[in-house]
Image 1: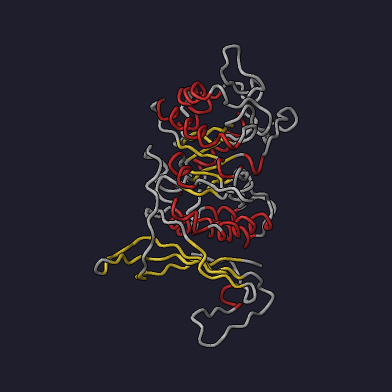
Image 2: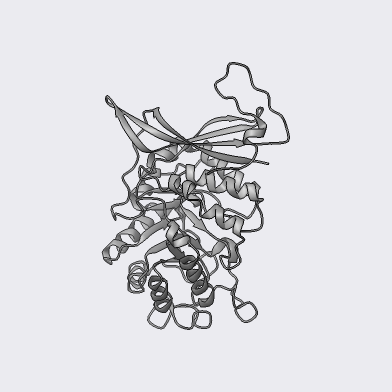
Length: 385
């Protein structure tokens, strides 16, 4: 069973490279935290037969109540975010977006007002193309109008997908939407899917341009509810870390996708693994589980204040993998965090360190005299405090 243990180490000397100051809207100075519908509830629009689990008003009102009353808001989770399939299949007669009237009978402004009334913030999904990935109206041709609509509705966070759009147009289209968002005068966190549609192969990803245009961006494929999906994403982040780390920092975050904690595909230890490594990566902590039925042991993972503190560290430096050894069955990740001190002209960082045992059932051997010396019994489980 794979796992991570976060350890807090202080007064280690290091020279850490520069990181980006962020999109010029002053938002997301630490990785966003919240709840998003997609991984758990997908595009379930059958509110007749499944009224409490479909993409509709009831689901989001109930999740907002649980976020506010269940300790999540107080721990830093603040966004309730609609994903795909919330819309009517067509715009209204004036070309404006509208929610599905049967599933959202009170309308989006009502939902936004309620979410704000319980001390949370409201996020919404759209797509930069002609249609969303689920086939609902996209924003192409309506970019300025739709951003103003979102501002009028009190939206605080916009997730903009990349279906039904030529990726060659992304360098123009994604930044332009950001301009329209800022022109509304309402602060809205901007989550882009720009690199997720061009990463891989021989494509060159313009990471700095993306960081200049968006507060956070989905880097890779959608996460699925499985440990294989999780480990594939983690391996990709390790492979690409020298490109990803320089553009991460306050206002700019690489996004490996939603947390699977509380869902069905991961063991208890694997869920702790994800929470730990997402914090080392300075990744957005976006839950996608049913908070109404969340079991206590999974709630404790999501509300672990020490791990959240690593994730939300104000330096905003993304961690990196420093050791990987498949033959010895271990990975080690580190992240510079506060508190810091100075020794002459050198910044002295504290560190969070994540150690992952890849296979607890094999007994790796270590060469005497090496600096790394882990034993199976001490690090075979995911444990942090």
